Image 1 (cartoon, one colour):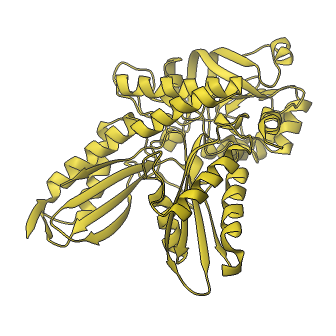
Image 2 (cartoon, chains in turn green, blue):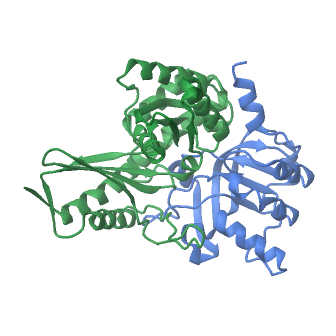
Image 3 (cartoon, one colour):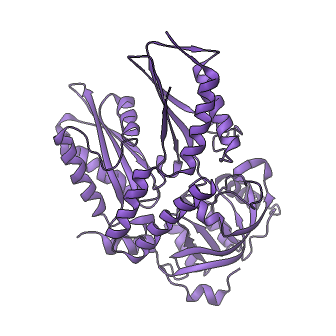
Length: 280
Length: 176
């Protein structure tokens, strides 16, 4: 068995929380730059240039890109040959979040009860998704998720007869309804298939895909391209103030589903899309 | 403060650089302010003619007045804003569209709603020259901060005549 100490996991998670918040993903930054060349709205160009400058200031000065340093979404792939030493894995991850948000001057945005709303004061707990995989490694991805965009996400259980048109209409409808709120230009994560919660998780995982990569299945890659065009024709534009660049990418992930069902989830991510991983 | 004349001259789509004082307030602060108004209590801040910025900052690093402080989604404040506007609030800064009720109140009371660029919190924080907590300290990032800003870059989203850039802009660029 490969042994990994919880203290190492805590240290790595703390670092990932800070770095992911300070440095805009390279592919997102590149996509913003390309968008600034394509955009036709003067206000839209101004917004895109502001976002690029903001990312540069954040990186140079060690500041979070955005004040919404998010709820810490953590994806863990743990090899079957890994033994965690020194305590609970979940505990070690949450301790890493606690330390990273404090040391990194990140905002504490978590309330302990959704109705009574008292701040937990250390941005814990994280939302952690575990996958057990083959091998002797541990992969941890931290994706701080802002809620301006999270709030604009949607899920629908379509009928099989709704088909691909139903999926496309639901994605377009969700982005149109979201409008300016999720801080466009956005990345649109779509999960199709599985069960209700599986489609939502697929949509979230789709946001981790690097731009401009497509789904490896040409059928779905075409749908992605078509949807990106359709979304950018909506006119929402950068910051939602009008323009031709509303989304940077549409990423679809799919999973087998039930003969009676066609679940579709849309998870939207903002112009400050952040994620970073480490493999131990 | 921005004078009534200046407000009336600004049109949806104009850029503007604000220098002066403002208060940050978001969800829970709005709820508490409106509860105070409804029960006839004195407000902990004077909102008459004030500038309110929908934002909750990151903690300040040593030597800085504040951490990143970009706008949050204004729509979550829509159910509270008409009451505050009715009690003298004139100027709001945030991001995203407002409800019809808010736009109507802005027009009626000759106020203005500015958009700041969502996602540009680091850049916007560099416009802040001083910061202190003005109310509801126990709310942490949701407390009301009194900020002094210099040249805060804004775009007029809803002007004093009720014209709404969030409606006009996307309509203009949508492919028919």
